[in-house]
View 1: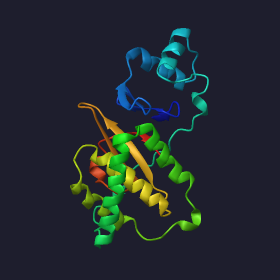
View 2: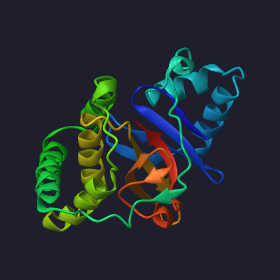
View 3: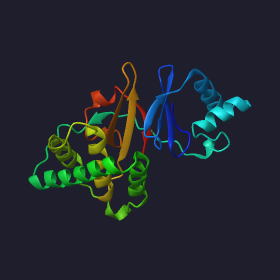
Length: 213
């Protein structure tokens, strides 16, 4: 189960545990037993007592409005594009420039605003700008360019850069954020339909998607 509970709050179930992503607070957190019970009743559309409603509102979730928020469509990954090669230096240069821009954005801009900009690239896509060239070589260039940047926030930086670039060139890709437990970890990747563009299918399958934009 992956749900949008507000424009900033996303949730997914990992085993028996519910994990939440708060974009405005720039954090992941595990739902407490009380919060998880309240969320389960909310998702089941069961009546909520005053204490549960207050608890949800404290987390930025409005029980009266959450069902009006469109939840992300999750496409299960079935393959990857790791066999593709960058082909030429020009692609690598483009990837470096776009990753540098993403790195600057992550340093000075909130995650909420960055994800909002990623959403805007889909809203502003022009259907007649779609190209039919495979995204594989472009994704390979973004992977190859990662070595020129610090390792922190690698997957997030690379995925944001690739998603924005691909959409501006007419490809309706999807940026995913996923989580896993024991130990907790978060990961970010980009898919073109069911094909993972910038990571291996085996790595992505370790994570449960919590957000898709």
